[in-house]
Amino acid sequence: MNGFADHLMVRYLQPEHVASLLVPQDDPDRHRLRSLLAAVYEPALLEVRFVDAVEITATNFQVPVSAPVTVRGSWEKLLPDVAQARATLEVPAVAPPNWIDLSLETVVTARVALTSGALDALDAEDLSGLSEEEFVAKFGFLDLAELMRRAKAADYGELQAQFPRLYRLHYADAPPFDPDEPGRTYRLRISVLFFPDLDLGAALRRLVQCRRALDDTRPRPDEYDGGALLAASAWLAVFPAAALAPNTAPATGQQVSDLLAAEGFVAAFEDVA
Image (cartoon, rainbow, N blue to C red; front, side):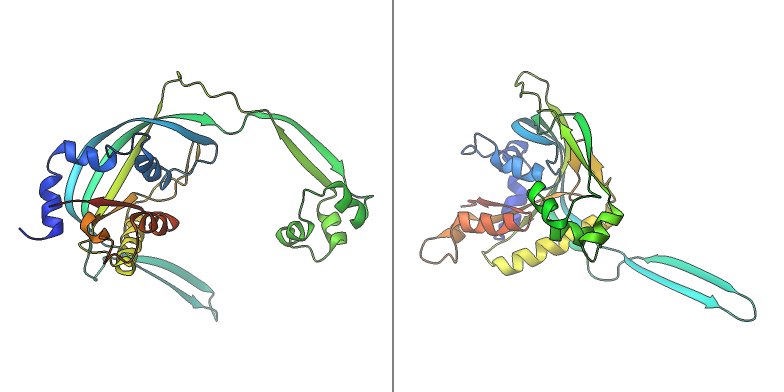
């Protein structure tokens, strides 16, 4: 057994090693787990303050995932009889599957704080009598050019005609964070890929390909009660710690983590010696 993936699969047969992968001993604030959670649950209205626990409910190795091929077509007949038909056909994938080295189903318990209070007041401002200069002076916090672009208005006069009143929503201050409040639970799928070397380009291509395939085959709700759902799974890339040898590594561990984080992935380094 010489392969990096082989060593890790045998290691992760032990639940305590899987737990250590998600919550390393040198990560007391559980930043890795928080990053995995944030890759799926967008913190729009809620901010995670503490991650209290993670329960691993299912562990599977070498899980295949293939995105189906969707074919859409239409048929029309105009004369002498008008007829029209449209159809969508989903064809099973014919390309080789992508393989997820380790698939985890988890339940994460976290204490969160609200980042915005409830709607407190609503007021409106009459724009019909304001010149463009007066509008800019009064509402300097608004980007007028961007507002016209979003409203698809050619000029300020057209914007006034479309929106004669400007409505402003006032929200109450968010309630203070109470650390004694019970935590919320989040179901989190974590897909782990093993990489035997530090070829970052190849790693990113495989991660993106696998994520896209899984998102296409695992429908999910568009949102939850605290924001949007960003993906069907969080993705964790595991590299050998030996690949970070100072004399041969193309990047430091922090640089690798930053690069993957920019694309929504999390990096880990394991020593199999």
